Length: 537
Image 1 (cartoon, rainbow, N blue to C red):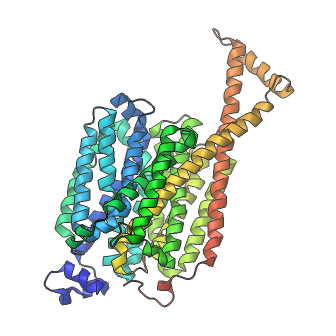
Image 2 (image 1 turned 60 degrees about the vertical axis):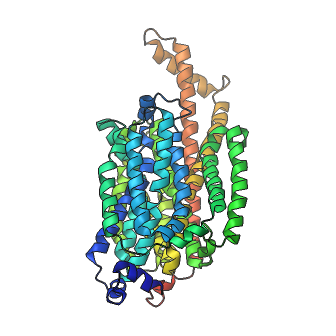
Image 3 (image 1 turned 45 degrees about the horizontal axis):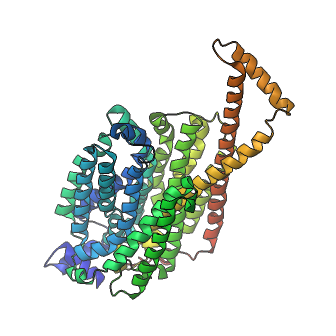
């Protein structure tokens, strides 16, 4: 029945003639082009999460914003996006993929243009929130379309494509942002979306024909569920984003958001289980494959966004790199993902998906374990192998996770499930960043206290070091040699404490991903690999 509905949406009035398009290996060119346009739109939406992160200082200077205000350029986007992603499943069923995606692409493009015209921080925050909320509708639509319109025989091509976009976009975001802001100005971080956005919106309206709207759902729209979900997810994102830097609930704003999050969560889950048409249908989690796939997606989000954050922080704080230099140093991961994507697609048809995930998780763990030997002198070549392992392993994880989570669901559940699946990756990133920041702050203080105990006046090694440094500074005219030596020694202690805290985080990630690599052994073999079945199709 679901197949007939989708087919009818493809060629109105001729459902029988169009039916073979869903099962035959040959895909209509119209649908392939439409899907490629959707993939590019998703790429822009995900890229915009990180493209601004490397250029916040330039935006801060351009808008005369304070250091407390400028993080909201990122936070507003993330909070708005995390609310739209699960909501998009219901909206897609109500409005159709064509209307939702076109509206999302056009709205994202307009909000990007507005962000480039912002003259103060308040305008920028509003425009970024609009950009994140509307643009968030594009991401789950692509995942749902990939597993709805393409037959299982094409998943070796389609799944690596969407997996590559979902992982590559946030990885290269700081690199792209650094190049744009250096070569032109921060305004072009947003203006660069305008022309591609118009093309994507036009192509989506002209070519998408996957389904039909069901406007009757509007009368059943659960407004209380939406309010509860917005309060729950939005405040959760804020608490996780700001908590580590403000001693968690000791900060009044974080404490207030934690209370609102709790109340919103109660309302949201109450409506999920009692509303006739809930905003988010959690029944997809009754599918064991989807539940495990979502769990793994959550953990991949920790690794994906965690390392996208950790490497630039290390290079900026310890090595003193600017955004351009950081982007150049980290581009290797993106190249590794790009070249691994087709290999991952081929392997997904050749070997057990569980084995692929195990290789990916253990490869990722190997890369983070390598980083536990970090020193202050590590540069491009020392980071090369960990970055290659990171990029290759991420692709080997994402492709089987996508197939396991969404590949066996019936078509009528795919739209809603796609939103939930993408939400888990974003929430994993938010939880991972909060955990990483907390560990960095706490372990930095711990290591600094321990190292300071060995740099006391009673320590012969410390006094010898201080005397040698003082002698060196005495040769420089105009300096108080003793004060300069003490300041230099203190900076060395702070640097070593920071390095040790980075090592602790990398070890934590190593244990997490290594344990998941072995946990994969306990998952049942994916249904589509047991007898060549096609899952939900």
